[in-house]
Length: 317
Image 1 (cartoon, rainbow, N blue to C red):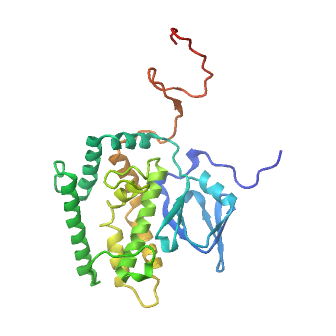
Image 2: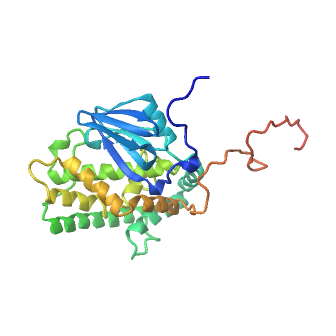
Image 3: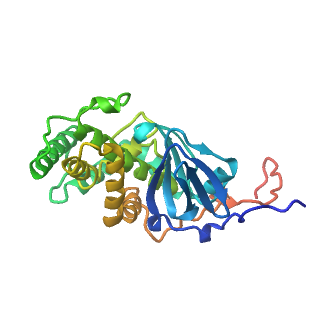
């Protein structure tokens, strides 16, 4: 038998918990290979070894060359891998993440498929942004109007605080440089937040496409989820970055680094895990380990891996 090189695939119990991992790592113009249980990143400046089990999401920008062995390790370690455009502006593809349980996915699908429960979840998400107001009786139209007024006020207050001029949100995803510095920073900050939101959703086994406010897109729930944190994280970070900007600074890089620090300082990853469970009505004591069963319309869940015998018409099991 051929001896397997490298480290063996870790058990689920050995993998770092989602809430305890680092938030994200963005790479571009580099070669990624596997070295034991770590990702070996090399470019013209040298080599860096990144332990695979400590990263929540790896954002791969242009010019990245990834070996099959590196991708195998990322999958085994439950690392969410997202292929993005230059400066992380577009998301093109993604890989499978950590959780193998369908618990949150089933809860999300059940809530999404009923108009009343979908509205209740949407109200719950808006309530998180308005902790001092009762939004339980508001329609979606009223909630959107209330949220729009809140976001406009956030932009205005951040502009006054930092001295950065603000007019309106304006950007072209096909031409990052065409927008103003503050809009460039907001785009980079929001994309980092979307990446982290996506990684938590996928790692916990929920669906990125079943949104309760946004709909019709494969990342609808990512936009729902990220909107909960923009006023606290991406918007102020973008204004802070532009306020401290010098002529030679790289806006997108500076913004990403500032977002990474804000995620860590604000312990956002742990908050996201708890918030996601609360939104979907799943308690912390419910298991995250998969238990594969067979569904039965009469008998409920049946044991998987059993050689069942044929039941003749008229017989009972």
